[in-house]
Picture (cartoon, rainbow, N blue to C red):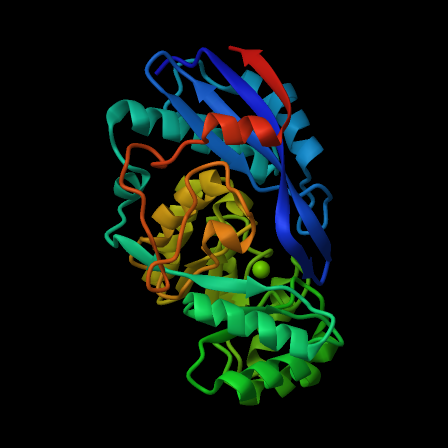
Length: 366
Ligand SMILES: [Mg+2]
């Protein structure tokens, strides 16, 4: 498959409400899209890096730079998706940039072949259960109103963002208000240290499905100590950037659940490797989110349809984050999202909507 050129497109997507986590507040999603053009088809990839290096070391300007300076020039002109991974391998890190490029090539190839992403990955399910991630709020009553609204919309699982000073009380309030049957979990985005273990143990009585990434992104050993000291299952997000990391975490006992984000791990092929590894070890996985537009969301929903994704993901409806998406919006039906069945990722940006949010474009001939 010959690639004729690649477009880097920067778009600005206003969020329906500010989204606050332990590392900051977002009011607008600054997104880098990669469009791969071949004579037969075009493919799209969405880079999940944020504006600043807060979730991980990557950030949008840095991703654009490494793509134009190193990754795109290294791409074989007749790229198949496995060749892309090999060509990008010598460059350390920059997994979000690599994932966007590999996904765009994969999408183009699958569209040309008439095969869906879900079918390529080996998915069986035709719809996936949708959870929602609820940001840190100014007050517990405000949080309870937000959770109540999401449950009314049909979300089947609630995730609360937590940080020191906003943890036990909001979790207790949500559990007491909505009862023991609510699927509830918490995400600390690396906001604690191992000395907080007794405090985190105070979450144990609330029957959480899991606590996500309580400690630093680069400390599997301390997570393994924490996992032995609290009853709530530990799930890792930021710490798992590859199948090798997942293997190390499992053998150390650093987690019993993994949040798989294709952008964080370098693409959908690596995401599937982590899924396969975890499934073989009896470790449950679920699909996280990075406030994706419909482009990234479509591919995530296809991944979440694999059989090892036994917990609801953060694959929410488009309306959770955006009043207007750049694709046809993903909508909840009975608490689920339908897995796209069309060729490739199964959706494409709508030209008028895309133009409205575009900040800049750059064309690179190959
Ligand atoms: Mg997380």
